[in-house]
Structure formats: C-alpha cells, structure tokens
Image: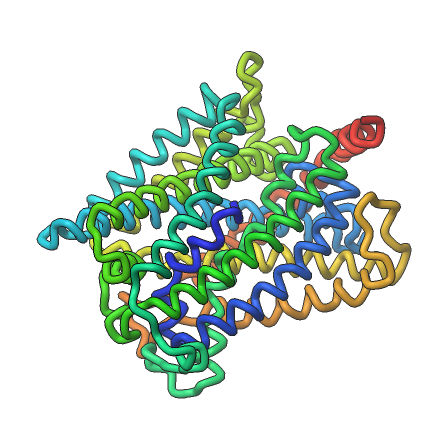
Length: 466
C-alpha cells in the first residue's frame, strides 16, 4: 500500500498545512518517517519469525504474559480488524472525493460530495469485489503493472511540475502558519502530524499475505522494510517539490481539492492536468486493491480464529479465495460509506482519517509492549531478519513513538469543534473497544481459547521446511 506514499503527500496536503503550514508539513513528515522506519524494522524482525495472516494477534498470543494473554489477543484482533476496515474505507472515500473534485475542476457548477461520492465508492467497491473474488489470480500482475506505472508517473509528474510551475523561495521550508484555530504552537504542530501518520499506517499489511507468499520469512520482511524506506525518500522529495511550486498557502486551504488546485495552477495545461490526475487515480486504485486484499484476508483469519462467526472463514475450493470474507469486507465498507450522505466528502474524509491510525497504533503499541516483555525475559527465538544488539533500543523507541502519536490522533484538526469538524475516530474507536470488552466478559472469557494454535504451528513448520 505504501508504494504510493509520494503521491499521498499531495493528497493529504490540506490537513498537513492546516496545522503548521509549510514548515510543519515538511518537518512533521521527517519525524514521522523516522519513527515509521523504526516501527517497520521491529515488525520485520517479528515477520521473519511468524509471517501469518492476523499477524498482530498471533504475535500477541505467543509473547504476551500468560496472565493476560487471551484478553490482550482478543482486544488485539478486534483493534487490527477495525484498523484495516477503516484504512480501506478512507482509501475508497478518497477516490470518490477525487473523482468528484476532478469533474469540478472542469465544471465548477458540479457539486462535490454527498450521494455522488456514495455512488463513486459503490462502483469502486464493486470492481474491487469482482477482482478479489473471481479474478484474484490477475491481482498480483495488475499490482505489478500499476507499480511500474507509479514509478514512471513519479518522474513524469515531478519533472512536469518543476519545469512548468512558478517557484517559491527556499524560505517556504521554514514558514510556519496556523489555519486551524489552535493558539498553542506545540499543539498545532503535533496535530499536524496526523495526516503524515496516516500515510504510513498499515505498514505490516504485506504480512497478512504471508501464507500466500513464497519464502515469506525472507521476502516479507525485506519487502515491508525497504518499501517504507524507498517510498519514504520518494515522498520527501515530492513533498519538497509541492512546497517549492505550490500557490499561496491561504489559497491552498480554501480550495475544494488543494492538491488538484496546486497541479492546475502549476501545469497551466488542462490536458496535461487531466492526464496526470488520471494517473494519480490509477495509483489510488492500486492502493485500494492492495488494502482490500489484506483486509479481506485479515477478516478471513479473524473468523478462522473465532473472533467473528466461523461462517466467514470459508474458502472456495475452486478459486481458493475466502469469498464470504471478501463480501463481508465489502458490506462493511459500503455501510461506512453512507457517512458521506448529507455532507461534503472532504469533511467525511477528515472525520474518519484518524480512525485507522488510532486503531492500528493501538495494535502496534500492544505488539511492541509484549515483544519488549519477551526480550527482557525469555528472548525472541531465532529469526532470519535480526536487529541484533540494537533490537532492544529500537523496540523501546518504536513503543515510545507509537504511544506519543496515539495521544494526538483523537484531536480535531480545527477548533472550535462542531459536529461538522469533529474528529470521530476517538468515539468510534471507544465504542468498538467497549463492545469487544463486553463480548469478552459475556462470552469470550469462558468460550474463546485464543487463535488456532495448531494451525499457527503448522504454518510455521511449513515456513521452516520451505
């Protein structure tokens, strides 16, 4: 999902400059990138031990203290599932918003958002469902082709913007501004981290495809870590390009789609603008396709392990695809998409963008905590990807960074807070967690014995023998 980070720096530019302006946009990205690289290095080490669908809750079960193992695993499973569902919801919602904004650029009378965005998302989800159900064998090839297109698009867009657009002075890199209403600079700067965090959330997504990957104990950690590093560097270069070439910041925050407005004013050619935005939409489509595959496999794994009804753990014998899990994933996303009704898409997107970050960072905090416990007690088992002596320090750094980010994720991006600008990630996450804990005390505490241990051991033995 993170091969598109460089373009996401443009897609998230509105919320990034709202708190901190150009300087906050740049330096928050650097801070988050460094923190995410540490996170991914720690995850890579764990993936080289157990690259399995539902990774976080399997890791939690294996390395948590015995006294709270099953409870933490139960909470971990629900947290991870919620995180991936909301990631997919934000991606398809962003695609729907982008389609509407693109039409608006050529037809200013066209209204963006509302029921139109709902229809766009429905169409995208229909395509995703068909691809993930009946033509899944084509998905890896499609992702490879779109990945190549993405790299070519990067060079094409960067060169076009640098050549055709007017330039800001280098002072733009240290220009701090606030448009959100926060009076405290530190609070504003910290809230400005939220869109940067979202760009990298789900760094472990490839691990959930580990059981369908050749030599996963080597390929999964390598692919995950280096994709973050390479795309993080590409993202930094593209972000600096947007800053040097963007219109006045005040105009950006008032535009319907700030990134499209940047490209429109920079390129000076409607035809070139249309070609580039279509390429961007293709990249976003590829991100969503990858997220759908990971999310549906996680849904299947959580059903397989008793977190949700076992009905959704069925795998079709002909296609070898968890069809029911795919359909359940599609249904949940379409229900979340109804949030678009009665509001504009930018507001809907902003209201749920922090939810995947909050849910998955809670998941990460649990993993890093139980891993730290294991390092300090029995030690981690042998792994293909090892951080060596730096492992303990990096584990602590990853945990501190994760917890610090979690403090700010529920904050609204604007004040004063209204129903229109509310960050709903905190309340939604709290409701789901209260439901999960209620289910634990009512049913799971007595009837749920943790994930399928025999299956996990079988998968690990297969990895070791391959």
